[in-house]
Length: 603
Image (cartoon, rainbow, N blue to C red; front, side, top):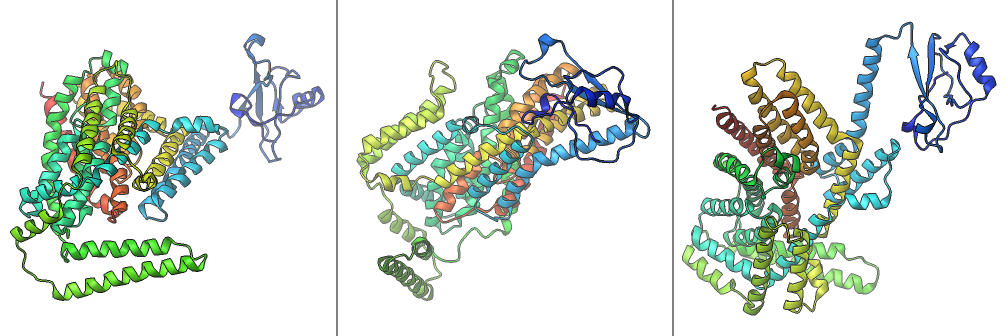
């Protein structure tokens, strides 16, 4: 018979009490040896019969009566094996248990990651299925959370920020501002592609250092798409470049990226001397080197990438319009005769545009005149509603200023989510929005659903112990390495290990829970090894922020931009982003490592 240990771990199951007669038989049986008699309060669970060697000792342990929960009179049981059982076998069982537990933690995330990587389903669907699998894993280990707890796992502040900014951007787009801004950028670049890409990347990196990455991406994505349509470019690769430089630029200050905010706001780290000014000063210098390296690698990667479209802008625009008509026809159900008529009209509209595209391709000219294009664009792109433009500009500037101020003024008890929501409500009132349903259609709901699923998935993995598991073993590996290097090399080895582990882990899981789990690890490493705390914090900040460029799901800005791009008809796939982002992540992490070694070990 196999005995299962009973204690607080077995919550949810109901044990069967063992009679005194059975206890007497057990004590006299040659299979068991009891070092002391068992009382009737002992409870044993009998599993299905199995052949186990005798020579097994059962020992019961009791606490005092006062220590016991009156509702739980179960006694804990421990088993001691003799004969062929040895410490090696027990160690082997322990290792297998660790691997089995790790596999339970990994499975939900692995399913989600594979579904997104190979586009098996939409990423929002993958996030929902992944979160459902993680909740099932929690239920399997008797940790199923109630619905109220699950709702607290969703970061409503982030969702409020996204929703509010999407409303602001949607109203702002009606003024024609993004078209006008694209025209000005076209004048500055004079039609040169790389001059334009450099301008956009620099603007993205600088603004991301002071505003949140998500805010910058929400504001710049419509401008970039319009600008690419003007210049007849493929927006996909330019948007990827903006995402990458947004993540790098956000790492330059203590307020640009969520991991930096968590590090600076931690009370223990602040008491240990981690200050806003020194944090920003140290990281900004290293980020400048990373930006230069990222730009060079980007040009190298894009050398063989087709950025300029073969067709002129008017044909590309007609292609997108025809695709929209066809998608609208596909979504329309054929229930009634009226539905069939509407669907037929939509398909006829799409076919008419496709015929016009064919005729234009036959008549198109191969010569391009910058001045002529500029005059055509000036007639087409201008501020259409100046009154609405002034109202929207005032609200958006006020929101951005409050974003900046709230990070310094503690008495301003407003988060970025509340600021964005209040700004959106104020703009709706000032703009006198009458077609509210049309405005709601501009919100990227699939992105919001994706984030809900992602938050629940990551928190479930945290509850399963995955994040703690990674943090614990990272600490153990660093301590093991400390014993094999010289005293002068310990800090350098620790920094290298931290920056690379944090970069690689942050490329595949959300860096916010990982940062939360790693802060105690870094503090404990500082206390037990005596290493300087500041270089360890700098290393972790570099790794967790730069790792956001590793994959499409590594950072919030990546997902937001992908959702907006898909809404405009330019989907960014996981593999397309990975081929660019992961290489730049490796290059910038190497650069950050060299900078840390040169700046922190110079003494």
